[in-house]
Image (tube, rainbow, N blue to C red; front, side, top):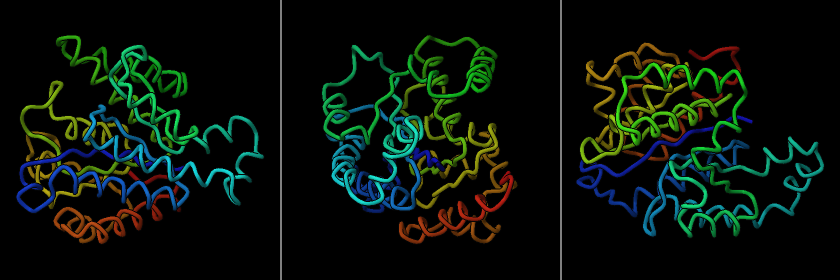
Length: 267
């Protein structure tokens, strides 16, 4: 199953364009809805807040759960246990928190979604990737310059997020450029790791923020995005980066994914 990692957070520029936190949440749900309807899995790495994006995603997960007993979803349940498990866990959320300290809303959302949404604490993330990928993550993280523990944990979590895109891609939208957690803005680190792991990357830079900064600032290594293959032509990639039309952006991303699926590699 193809996975789409959605790396999104509000930005000052997006707010100026009329996309406040609530509108950003709606965009994330719209993307999740689209990719789930295309038989893909969506993956997030967001913390939980009452008004945050994962609360909006959780509400949508309950809608998806209502379909589990119907038609095509029933057929999935008749497959092998492992395949059925992957098919059922259509929405994954990795969080930098131990399970005993998870937000109550996260636990309730996981339970109420009927297994469609799976919340995975950082300490459990390693069990959701292969042994070879696990070793690769630990090697890359241990080679990082030693920082405070929180930064290392966030970087490790983002490596695992990227490893789960197997096969899969990452979509970036907005993102804080200051006041962020970790050694660098989360959207930027996740975009950079997508390129490092050779995963197709799609930047929606028209909404500003860290996504736009990554695509135009050579100091952040984002210039390599323009040479990396993601199934789009250079003109389409530029259009995706500049547009503020969400439906057009989703259409372009879908076109890129379809192109990648039809190739042995998309890097």
